[in-house]
Length: 173
Image (cartoon, rainbow, N blue to C red; front, top):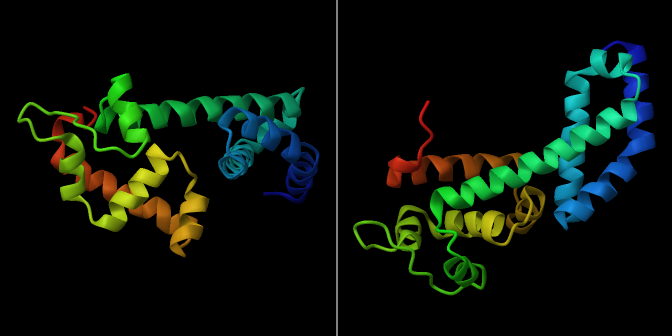
């Protein structure tokens, strides 16, 4: 980035970060995830700095990007849950309350059992914390004494394992 772009972005960050983080925290009900999301918004701003600098309302651009990231985050979370778990309200509430849910696949082995068998206890814990408990990578990383990047990479590996167990759930290209 050029010095004037860097200065422009820094001014936007100082002016809007707290406001965007408050908005995101209200929508996500998780301060840590909200801060992660707003950091991602500013990363997007870096990628589109030329558009942002010529925009008539850079603060509005940041707010709209925040709204889009919140919607994208929720869609991804719901899509992931749909992919691996039944969202039958009774079943989902059992899972959320940490009871053994009997999610059945055609071969009558509960999907949760298949997931538990495919993953190590640590991997299952990470998956549960991220998607059932809806915690952020930052919180999980702190709990496990790892970096956020390591948490994200572990989730990527978990997804690969689960796609092997549930190949029918993989997106068609």
